Length: 298
Image (cartoon, rainbow, N blue to C red; front, side, top):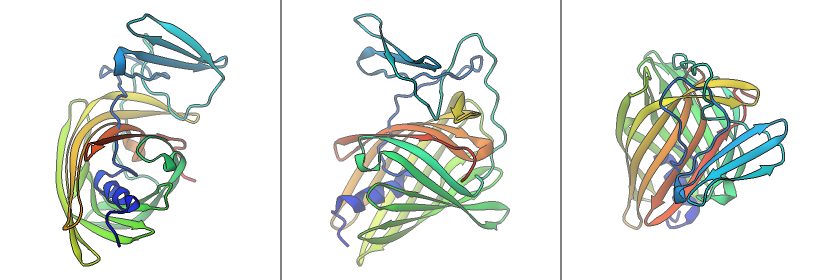
């Protein structure tokens, strides 16, 4: 197995970052206040511009404001899997329910971004039940990218946290198993605005007789709430902002990743409804956006 192959590098990055490709984009913002209801809005702070897209029966109208002043453009009607952000003067965003493990089944995400264009489009995530351990509910979540690589994370959902104990990376070049020491802390419960947590974990494995070490450090904070529209379902979510670093070390390959992300987490469904993030790997940047298309498993 050749660690210098791009497919294998992407697979390693997937395990380390808990997404299909580490390259998370953090331009998506939501008010931390709770006095507004979610509507279709995207905010892009690059170049000093803010873009607000409102979708209705007449189609989508986009208002862009920047140094040159506001402009508007019309687009044909579209169906959005997620409506995230706020509309003034409406009811408060409901607080998401208590966290629990996702229901087994298949969930579809729309993928977009520059990190791995071959993965753009609809991609399925499969959730399987695992035996409970020490009162924690077991789950395995499996993702696949456009190159045939798969990532399977084994999770333990307890009253105080969701932790990832191990990751299996399967690619055309082979299979790698990582056991995290300690288990990666993905979420710390109960969630509330202002809650923070940190994870610092290492996976050491062997590939073709050579030791490979992945070290993952990340800090997360709940910054607000959002009411996301997934299909016809309005889903209260926590808005979580994260920053992190991942290092991969071996005798013949080294990689350093810096990343930031904004995620919407529907705690009472155990699902991410939205994720937008950016990452830089050895000086090269990429981004990825994932939008949930169904909250009920197929």
